[in-house]
Image (cartoon, rainbow, N blue to C red; front, side, top):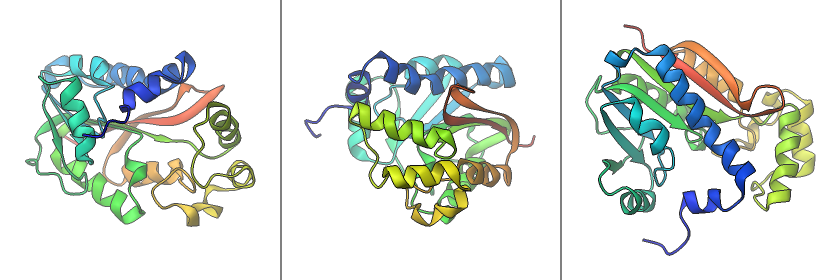
Length: 233
């Protein structure tokens, strides 16, 4: 395993404001699961893109059984070092080695937009639908990179030294002032060119959308789009 810092260490080391914003997705997701799925239906949970387990304190109490999944083995090793008693595996969300209908809840935060193209994202959505039980819940978040949020994120990233590869001020301005489609040609698995609205429509082809909300704060800080979706019973 690499000697570099873990995801949690890098995140929490950037200060309380950054950590509060990033952890908001887990807080709101846990609240949404409790709202939309009765406790008797919360037997198992699958977390796709768990990194080193930073969301575990919020997600573990939601279900009796939980499995975390990472695409990179290095992240899986970091997870095992931090949480040796919690199950984790390395797998590709586009082809999950899991049984049909194996989970009551599937969550994924700021991960699915990293797939390199829309055909890959479609495959991932279908795989998640396959492993989710009828009546189960799919909760996910993706970044918002359009409107004034695009400019706010650009300046916030510069101020914190966390600049996004490929995102210049000129391009951030295009994200802010034009339709997302005008920059989608730059979408290659990063936030640049990514359209949360298009991803929501993709999810809606397989799931019933029950709730959607920008987090952490709807109006002032709409950084990410949190979506609660259900699989038809």
